[in-house]
Length: 193
Ligand SMILES: [Zn+2]
Image (cartoon, rainbow, N blue to C red; front, side):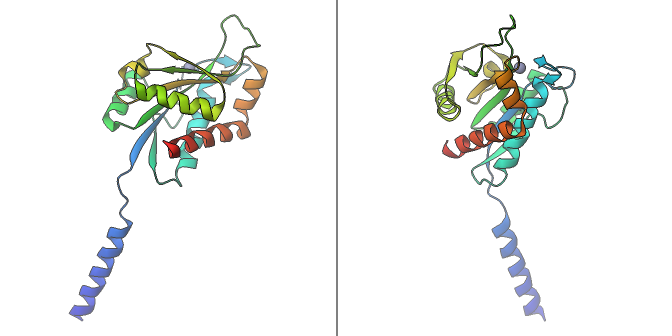
């Protein structure tokens, strides 16, 4: 009886140990704005909603991947300060930070479209921007002194995914298909990083 108990116990602990996940490395995806801070807003379509949907899709698609754990700075329509976001980032010390935003031209120039990337003064940040450019197609890349980039100790890129006041960008980025495609491209990029 004792022997069986011991056997059962050792089988249980072996099974338990083999299912204990290895601690994953983090990638932080930051959906900009939230709550009362809508970000850009055109025809009732708000930047905060589009970027949250894409961030959640990235998290969901990445769930089946082994390489990285995706952490979202917000998972609902809530406002988080930039300092709260970068404090969390620096606590997790992820391999990269992707901050998602949408553009809007101030002069209401509805012709402009496409991606715009902002990076830190770091080689890793530049490398990630190059990878994003390969995945998403042509992007303009510039260094900029933004809180998310300056205060994040991990390599970080802020991406404006498209122009909300450009019809084509707006329709694509607010569609389920467009959001899924963009999210998949980011997960592919993570797996290759
Ligand atoms: Zn924004």
